[in-house]
Amino acid sequence: MHPPSSTILSITRYFIPTGSINRTNDATAYLLNNAFRFALRRNDFRFNFNNSWIYGEQNTKLSNNDFVSTLDFNLYKTLPHFYYWGLANYTSAYSLKIDNQVQGGLGVAYNVVDKEHLVINLSNGILYEQSGIVLNDSVKEHYHTFRNSFRLQFRWKYKSAFTFTGIGFAQNSLNNGDDYILRANLNLSIKLYKWISFTTAYTYNNVSRTKRENMLFTYGLTFERFF
Image (cartoon, rainbow, N blue to C red; front, side, top):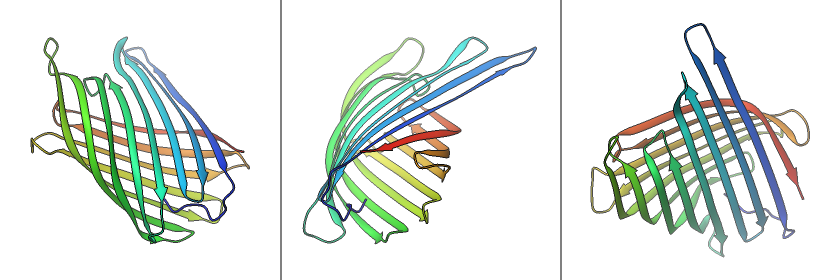
């Protein structure tokens, strides 16, 4: 969001493993959720590399095999509260019937509120997308489109103990009003030690073209190291 005040280069790594297993006389279910993030920051530039993989089964049937990898950067210039952003994203999601999806684009962002304890940010830009999706069990479709990508993002901090963040995307195709993607993520982090936090996260995805959506609530430990 807003850049650090120092010009010193900062590198951050996050590793977030979570999972669950549930077995009864009638059913068995398990879910594995792993995320890794690498961030590089200085006063005029930020670079983030985010990866997540969710794998799950219900009664020996595959329910999730979802992988997302995202590269994004923010470039801060002289205008106060404004900055430029760029994005490259790859998605393969069994639960959303996406064989593969590649997105890339550019845009601008504005910090509506930019304080130490509270940041509210709006951004907009244009993405180019190439996708391969599954319409039903036997029909696959490959297509490309340009999307308008609108984002709302916020972060609230209470001292160094609590951090509450949220981000939501609405990505509408520019040539098909019925083709849209909705994404949302909420995250609460409670600091336990210098580099360990307890985190809870809510994630929601909706892809109109495949008529699929998913929702995931997780909790676990986040391991965070600064260099």
